[in-house]
Image (tube, rainbow, N blue to C red; front, side, top):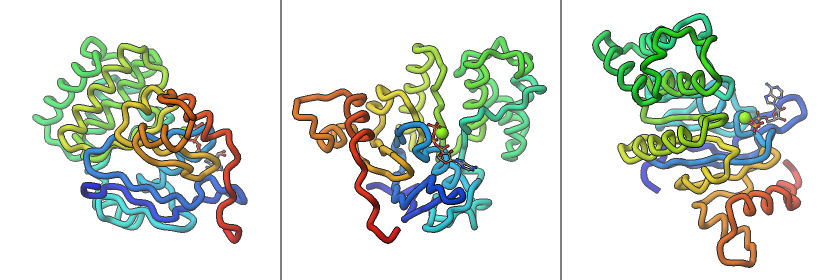
Length: 254
Ligand SMILES: Nc1ncnc2c1ncn2[C@@H]1O[C@H](COP(=O)(O)OP(=O)(O)OP(=O)(O)O)[C@@H](O)[C@H]1O
Ligand SMILES: [Mg+2]
């Protein structure tokens, strides 16, 4: 693998007795698009939150851009863009004010703020909405704004939790074109999705179930691992096969 940008080693997150993330070893290389899939409650958001320094692991380690997280997260914060599953925009600010707010947090200068806002409004088809308050946007518009906020400082690592959920199909395809162009320009993307057709478009896919990473590889490798017994199963069939078969218990003592 090229330079490793995200690495977790035996990372565990306990919520009381519940293992939301259970000994996950994840490696994402530079300019990869890595998709995490898995049933609701599998631990995808919890894993992403540990990678972006919001949640300390119960045990194990997380390294992002060569820094231990959360301990040294501050040093790399400005190189990361995070789009949380609960869309983080300020409802009482306009579209442009939201973007300006995030740009200022990342210390962009006034000229750069102007250019980036213009670029992102065009990219998200929101040019006419710049003065609209966020609480008057449609669900999909708010989501596009949330992604624009995560992209404002042109980060090299993007952590996107269900970035395309609820988008109309045309816009979803555009988002994917954009993800691929970001990846071609050296940006790394770790995302979660419930759309298995999207998993096909990732360089690598990690499948989570009950907190564990039960499979990891290119879409083609996962199809081989699922051993469906025929030429080309869909990703949906692979997902159902892998997540519904019994999971071997993790090494007794854990
Ligand atoms: N702050 C918390 N306190 C207690 N339990 C939590 C907390 N956050 C998550 N959990 C639990 O951890 C498990 C994993 O949740 P998580 O949100 O990571 O799943 P997910 O894979 O992102 O699911 P979805 O696809 O629905 O977003 C769930 O059982 C959830 O109830
Ligand atoms: Mg989630």
